[in-house]
Image (cartoon, rainbow, N blue to C red; front, side, top):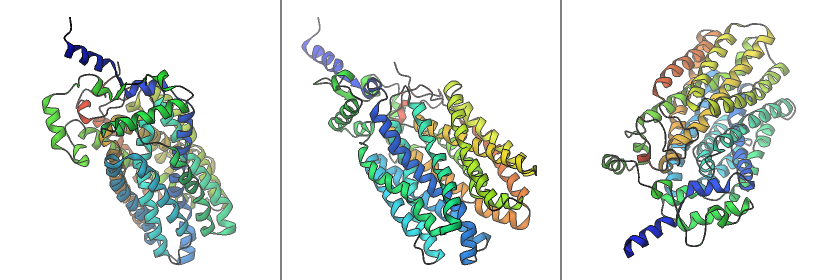
Length: 488
């Protein structure tokens, strides 16, 4: 017979329910469709702000007589602003909540995006674009964190791939807008029109609640319960239908069952209190290094396949309407990249898909360097763009899945920042090579970088995340076993 204290303990344990179980019972419904649209608009707006730089080069060169090095400062300065934003907003989201950062960053992007169109000199333009980068650096660090944490395990991967589709939507829209607006109304009107998606996003973001995972980590159980009830009711269910009966206690998975960690793990977690330092702890350092190198490689490839592509095309004799047409086709070719990434990563896992993407980019750029006919040029640029989005789509699924909640936003921000630091050198390297050599040297340099990163990260990636519950603490992540703790 159980003693009174043992009986009360057993009853308390029976009243616990894990957040993963509640989210799974809620399933994917109207709440998540609305979440996808709101977060997707933010991701699309970030794509618009990144890609539009490619269409400003020719206009700024004609307007202010800037040379290749001065033009190269613009994407580097935007990248530097993004790097600062990623490093600042990520830790803020982990310490003060996802939702405040989620809403503040989009306002910054909208305000300074509009101010960019009113720049009296290129110095002011560069300053405003720096602030735009600072704002969307926060979008990158926080959007995927809060989106991931509001999803159930089953269907999470597909939803993360769906949100990735909003990037090429933003990029394709930018190409079409540039084609329609710049030749007739000029670059200032182009910047104004490109600010519209961000303004729409700013009005929609208050609809998204705080992450219940973050709330539970901070001991704010009642607020987490309210968020879960809101999700259930928005999906057309009663709270009782998802296990939220009166008196139930909502907990994280590792609180509902014994932690698979040793005293050494707990000591390590307490030692690396700063979030950035914890990313380099025993359980996470390989993943942090691999993801940072991977993003750096994608950043280099992205500059060559998007921002610098109009210059490449000019050197191959493709100018005017043909250039806009080719850039638009490049953007549209990213949709098959996302579909292919979703198919491969859902059947073979995230890690093989990550490596396949970089290999495909390297091959596509290498072939593009030597082809001369218009049809082959378009095919190669579209393949490079398709492979690039393939890589980003898989990474944006893998990264928020592999890092624990307590450092997830910090990790996404830090990795994006280190990748940005690496890729910021791309404009200057390209300017040097195009001045001292030919477009062939520039393209082959980008291809070689992708091949090197592909080999290096292949040896570092060690954890598979497909069909795994999200880890919440670093102590849940085994340093070598490879996966977050599996769900029961």
